[in-house]
Length: 179
Image (cartoon, rainbow, N blue to C red; front, side):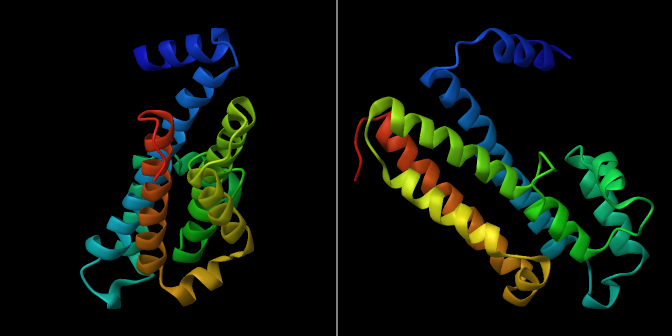
């Protein structure tokens, strides 16, 4: 409850300047990393055997994972009473722009706020260039393409890339160096 009060106060009273961009960027860097990691944990670690994929245990774990990131209700709104499946999870939590917990939603927000900082400071950055490439790539994907890549491999690369963007962002804007 206190977090929502603080967040609401900030979002409704903060000047929409570079400080606001830094605040929002922190939220979406954390969200992108957390969502990717929790999907990866569910997919790669929790399922005891490939034989369980698509079964009751698998579907139950997906529903628990959705609940853990506050997306179960949104998933049900998006897909109705349909079964929770691997491909729907990929579509919803990675590629769906209407899901505020999805990777593409977070990347879109990071892209937008890094773009604002680029304009505010009148200089580009490695983090802006890299997030633009990640954003462009995500827009070309679908659940089938991610399955072909392999969900674990896709998420591992995504986590590495989003952390690279964050490190470059941190170096430029917090340490004043861009290597």
